[in-house]
Length: 282
Image (cartoon, rainbow, N blue to C red; front, side, top):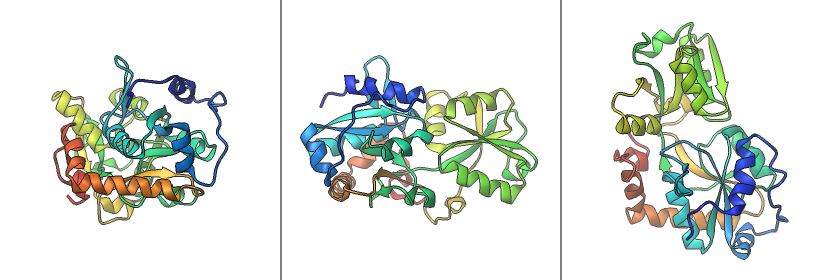
């Protein structure tokens, strides 16, 4: 399959990254069976975001890369179609799905709010872990020291849920919400935040690439902050109507990938060798 950025990608992703309504994106009439529609057109529009190593666009090659990209490409190959990535901020993903501008969203945690308006596939394709980070010399070494402090989180992400729970437990003074992680981390580095909730796998990947990274771990967050006994599971997300056969196609291929050990190989290729990324159990 062609991994380069396509003309369709430019018509959707660049507009979405600018925060527009994607009015210029191609529109497709909703059919009863979205899988049949995708096969007919020959490509699948996938809502994604830019957070290495989960997903990003390699500017040099135009390739959609990352964990989500590798899993999604394998699924698309099993269906027999290409992948058209649509890069958006987290808060724009659900509106894009509701507006039929993407067929599926790759890589979201399950939350009660999302379940009201979106459908999830059954089988998680990998598990994440969230982490509270602070500046290396910032003086915050445990969660108790967050009392009266200001923390950052990404708007529209499951980290908002964790942030509110941390505020209740530890007396955090304020939660500041950002549209993406990059400005949040810049504010943390500049001292405008005392700490931030980030994706632990992204932190692990950043430290692997740069051992002298600016930030330190305050704590990897237990799954109980999201009301679970397992690590946060990462799913594909779909519209509620007309997606039953598409969801089944995704689940069937994910089961095959995991049974064959190919899922762990994808995680290993990004240096995430802990089996918990596949099992959800620390």
